[in-house]
Image 1 (tube, one colour):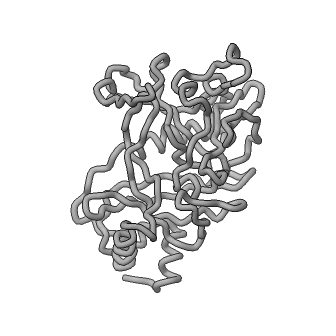
Image 2: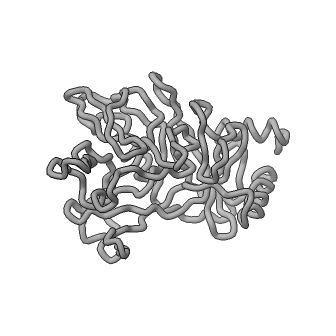
Length: 297
């Protein structure tokens, strides 16, 4: 497909009022779903996103920088104002193809008249211990410790940050096992409050989680030709200014979306015989493995 851009929903694109329909300005595809709440992926939870018991997430909207107003959608699908520095809201990207004919043959239509597109891929859900994935999970851990996993050559960029401070950046390494892709991850140390995975389990900040790299599902809005991520993908990103100006494009959020996430959702090509090394892993992961299993190699 041709070149694309990523951004966030605006407040107007996300506004739904069930009591006063004449004031509703939400995109048609969101109105069809009756609310704006979005499910978290496990990666979003591991990054510290606010999540409720139903796995729905608080996620960011585009700010009104001229009025210094920042907004988010809560887990009930309502829009509220937020603090600029809060990094614990999720990111639900909006995708726009510069060539509107690039995607038409790949649209998926369902019985509820909601059109979807499978485009790109990203680490989203953890392998479950109490399922048929347990064997794969054990094999991945053994091969990681023995440094015999094959890397695809791709890394994912993530922002770690606490409220009021500039973030640090970490990278997750993608591995290939039996023709499928996985990424190991340790939860952010800035987790605040009770956090849960889609499995219903509490998050343990001292263990390795393996996430499956899976296709991203986008909801298509026919009027605007925009695609909205069906689920939130990541969190930890704020709205600090990274260059002069007061437009959305001058913020850390826009930079993350179009410098990092834009590249990260493009599927990797497999690099043959590219064996894993703990020296190439993220620092938290390296410390965890060294502490638990001893330094290797």
